[in-house]
Image 1 (tube, helix red, strand yellow):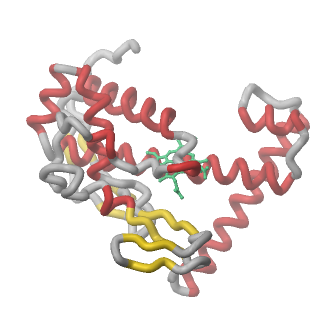
Image 2 (spheres, rainbow, N blue to C red; image 1 turned 180 degrees about the vertical axis):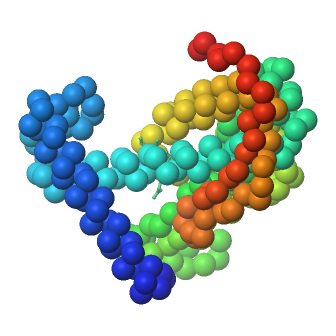
Length: 230
Ligand code: HEM
């Protein structure tokens, strides 16, 4: 549980965020909208104002910081494994699998929760109806029954994509294809443009138990190459 002070800070931040969303929605309504998803939702008029705010807040919250953290963790881990990075720079077709391995190795969303709708037995444990179950995504991603040498970072791992960093079942991540695309394009472009990118200080992890990522990742870019055209 957060301290009272953290709770107050979060409350103030949430109110500011809500104010920002209100103003943004109002701007879109007054200005006739743009070509964003939010404009399309507003034009449809089948959601109440509260639902529109919740929808926009969910997409921004679920879609922005997660990808930011995944990107930072991938950069730090690749820089820490220069042989594997060099192989990717020479053979860019390896990037999609490398992205899966960074997602497996660093689960951004460390855990999820579910409510048991009926009593069930899992591995000798009884879960009572109505109880909340925490699913340790980060632990499952390093399950030795599924992944050989689970604590090793290996961008050529054959089953890297078997991670559950995007969850599973009907609530699996809506933005997974977008996040994968952003990571593939972004990481490849970054390391091809700045092939000698390196750490320029100690990375500092955030202090969240839910979302794993760096709040501070100082890097030196080194010399730049011409930008890529995708
Ligand atoms: C690396 C980036 C991302 C990670 C690691 C991630 C992870 C997850 C996980 C684990 C869940 C399931 C939570 C649960 O089971 O309770 C989830 C759900 C969700 N994600 Fe993502 N996500 C990422 C990026 C995105 C992006 C880019 C978007 C949208 C643009 C997005 C939108 C959502 C939404 C809307 C849900 C809820 C789906 C539902 O409940 O039906 N996520 N995400």
